[in-house]
Image 1 (tube, chains in turn yellow, cyan):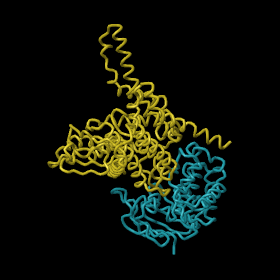
Image 2 (cartoon, each protein chain N blue to C red):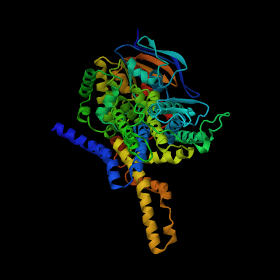
Image 3 (cartoon, each protein chain N blue to C red):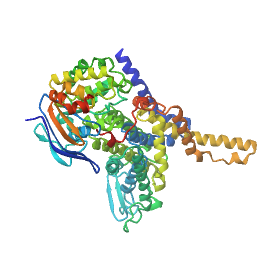
Image 4 (cartoon, rainbow over the protein chains, first blue to last red):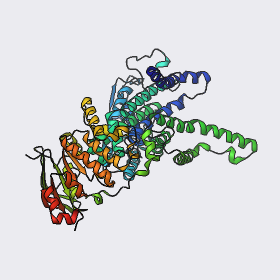
Length: 394
Length: 237
């Protein structure tokens, strides 16, 4: 009996993973061209799971998560392109590092796989740096400060083309021609399948799939860990948590750092995949989009968050363009210029906002709720009003 | 040597001078109570001991070591557990999860289980409700849970802040019976209580606080006889 239950519990995830594994081949066979969208969706699944650690597990409302996504992307821009003309350094890079005339290409060219690790570590470091001054803040104040950081980072990248004469970020023009990943020990890949090209998306797809699976695994392990329990305790009551022996400072910093790692990894992958990065790709909207995914899916629930990311990006990539076509068709048929030229995808944030409002009214705990979160939102009748600390002292 | 020795501490909330030189000692195995009216500094004294508030002057010595600068999350490791005012249980966790949080810093599974059984023996009510969300329990049950959770760390010193607050007299009696039992099993207790009547019944000694100062310190039996104490805190004329 017990084994059966275990098997049943495993059936769904294993089935989904198998489905994900055959997806690009089915997509190819059917000619539906969804692999590109699927890759971007997967990047957002990763981002949402990263933010879920901060918001869902530790209960720290972060409105600037895009900062880590941007940092990861810029790390890959710096370390895998010809951006830094001053130097010429390559290390295990799969890209062709010599020009036709045999001269070494300028810039830094490091293997994508090493950059992934560096990007994660760099984002974690920045997570701690950003997290540290916000530790004393709670609720609204924390949200405002993180919002500030989320705004500062893209501004920094936009204006970073002249830092005392040094061009760090190339400003609004961004960093282009980022190297593709590859396998360093198979320099002449056996066939096209193993090369990361723009025409064959399979290697990209399987790379991000692997990254997503790692992210899910780490999320699950964190949720069930000692640290995970500490996060829940801190989320519920900081004073009581401290009395249990939980160090509030390190517990919160771990949440920021670990969340940031996945933001950074997703950013690094995205930078290499898109091959060019601009500050405008990392606007406040993206933070909100990721947060919507977490809230819509169910804060703190890993599967809910994944579903939230898929649903919202599905709306973005699939539903809205589809609806757009239908509306245009109707417009053409009825001769209405207004409908024929309507630009439906432009209203995506309007739609997300509407969805969020409806969700908050009908099902505030998200599509697949986290048990404790659901109780926080529905059962809180006995909550004692939060009297200021000073006046409670006897 | 006393288990806990508070030596002339001064604590502040911003500019407010809340403790103006409080000294007290708690011997191993004792129940000591702090009584006094609202705003006398009882809770502030507990907070200073527990590290939530760092006294600007004075020393706090626990088990031979100065602890006035130790942060609250290290207190449990040193053997001081607190059942805070207003209970502060994790209301969305189950009873069992709350008790497990009390043993958060421990790794000895067997010992944790023993202490869990001990808590359930002290509070059979909790055993019946292990799976229940703590926040949905009655005030008395929540108070039991708060004390039980504090016991899960197997403390040398248990700080109890107003365990009688908001409870019906019958329940207060029940809770104080258990507090006495906990003490008889070997846990030293520092009890802050507005309900001086019950507090002085189970305590061996008491300190009377007024506006941040200790104005009287005596064995509980003597304090119960003291006319001033009787008038001010025991509700007698």
